[in-house]
Amino acid sequence: MSKHYFELSQLKDEAPDLFGIPTGTKLDEMFFKIEKENGGYVKKPLGGIPYLSVMNLTGIPDSGKSVLAEQFAVHQASRGYKVLFVTVESPASFLYSALKQKSEALNVDFSKVERNMVVIDASQDEELRENPKALMDTMAYAIKEKKTSITIIDSITGLYEHKEVMARQIVRQFFNFLKKFRQTGLFVSQKRSAQASESAEAAGGLAVAHIVDGTIVLDKKLIESRWDANLYNLPLGSVLRTIRIDGCRLTAHDSDTWVFEITELGVIRIISPLKDYVRGLKQKAD
Image (cartoon, rainbow, N blue to C red):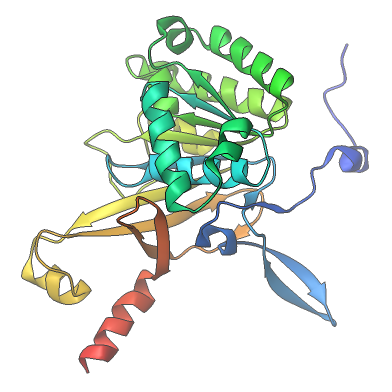
């Protein structure tokens, strides 16, 4: 009979180090660890999403999920790290164009990104979308052959879009797969129209949020009343975008809602906590 319990001390050698994998955004300062220093405790930025974590990016359509996932992928590939990008929604040729534009906007060498990015196109392959084992076998081969350390699936929802009762099972399989192959991962998940835009819930309910190591919620608010226009100092019809770390079981994190923008060049720039953003506008008005 196999052993299913351990003394805590036995797990020491297998426990991963706690450090950040940079996204190239202010998110890198929003995860932190507590260290003892000079007889007290200090909060130190982790420098990115936790190493070997599997994080969930969720939000309503056009909230910036894929933009953030692509920006993270380009940033890591440009630093010489091998990235596996599983595209489930957009055909690989369109992903190529998006990553090339991101590279230009971020002023990085696209030839380096090309060398360090591995793409699996499940968007046009029904077998890969409908059969988790077939997709994981393909991913396992790519990870081993290309020695990737980061995996992005955009979107995990596309792997159970017409069978949401299986969402928990499918998400768990891919979560365990990334843990087994020691990948730092991002799952992009879509929301259904009835789900609250600010919550961690996505298609399949809370299956993704409950299983993964943490969730980052992206949201957008349409400025459609004079009250909103005055509060946020934005014209009617414009959009206020926000980002929030909903939870992370691996490390401490900022819990505020932050304002961000997608620049004209198509990259994410996180500005400030929403409360400070509104307070600053009020101070200017006074």
